Image (cartoon, rainbow, N blue to C red; front, side):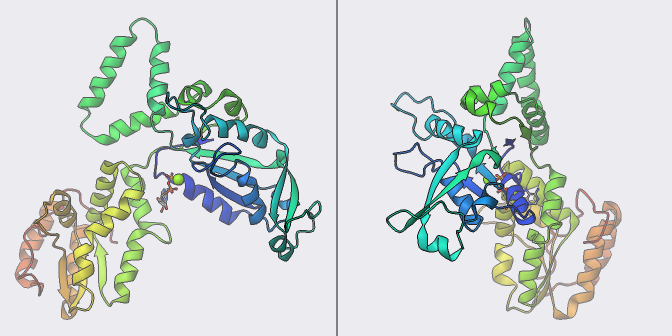
Length: 384
Ligand SMILES: Nc1ncnc2c1ncn2[C@@H]1O[C@H](COP(=O)(O)OP(=O)(O)O)[C@@H](O)[C@H]1O
Ligand SMILES: [Mg+2]
């Protein structure tokens, strides 16, 4: 079982594993699962999906991996309105046998099965369907979920264990949290709490003990920090920054982010608390004006500085984001400015910019915006 806050790459990790490994892998979302007989998918649909992904080869499917994503969503509901908890506890009960190892009869359409060469099938049945018999005992099951609120459960247990003065200790903790100036401290603390997860916490959260017992390994993914988010922005092959730079290049515009700007974006994303998913929203809102203005105009170069991101962060509705625009003939200004933003010390940078400001006159918006000019708080060490 994998626990971790949202947007830390749980699903991505699974998909990457699926790509890299030769074994068939089926990622099933637990949310639509219901107990057999009710509207919704049955629990054994995950095995069915695995069979499809294995091209109806039963022997391969029996060695496959099944990922049950969002498994915290099938936690037991304690709502008094339900007679039976058909999408929570019922599903967990249905999963028990599948995870433990059982023989399932899966029906698949015969014509599709035949095109994939389903020779291992145990014989065709009536109604154009073919029945496959699958033994699930060698299938690896991975459960993953965000388990929002689990940290509170753990904290309750931990402070209950420290007898006697626990009320005081907890108050102190809460106070510390409230006073901590940065959200990251809070995150760090949350992470260390999550790492202490034990099976009894999962039981309190709403998983039934039988299911927990069948999942021997529980690991925790930590939330992404600012530097992690910075790497997510720039390093992967399909990183957001690369995507945007490429899109703009197709329109003949060279888009560059200074290192300070990237860090500011990462900082903003940490604040939103939705992990790497926040980056996408920030980037698209940040570049909305540029998207409309730069392509098919005479602008050829665009720099997003830290100041631009900060303006964006603090902006009201009427305010606008003002990146640095350069037209075709100003490529040398573009390159010197970019290098300057990325390399110089804040004080030096200020001086250098005063000098450069006399020479450099970006064509649009009546010269450089004063907001985009001042030195970044955090300076960069390397070029983009
Ligand atoms: N460690 C990471 N490295 C690169 N990209 C990441 C990372 N974590 C998350 N992402 C990005 O965030 C998106 C959402 O991640 P996902 O795995 O779906 O989160 P969750 O943990 O909530 O399932 C992914 O599509 C990916 O682009
Ligand atoms: Mg996910």
